[in-house]
Image (cartoon, rainbow, N blue to C red; front, side, top):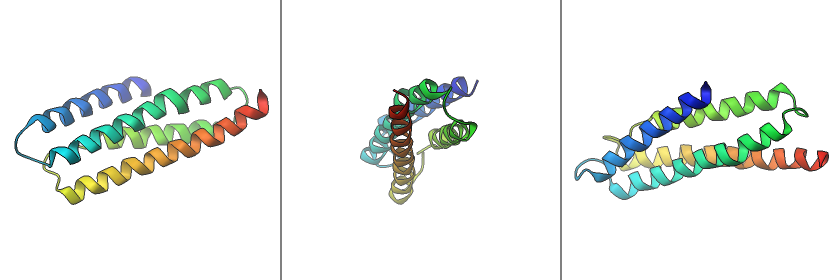
Length: 121
């Protein structure tokens, strides 16, 4: 259920960001594009790297790791729900930093999970 909600939010966010990027007024187009690129990278990393590792390790890890994934997924959903419409460059920069923090968290999760995975291979 969370995955379906996440995907709907991700698609909606991408559509909103895409529309904003095409409009002639509003936020700086390059900043909006940077937000879109960073967010897509975060979604990709979460769905294609973090989640598969968790699924692989599901039988050997405890609930805390799954809760950490859910928390990270919630952060991604919140970031994707933010509209860049009307954001100033400073607000866009702050949004980019939030997304980059999510990417750092995802990288950390991947590193930890790879370490756990290596112990069971």
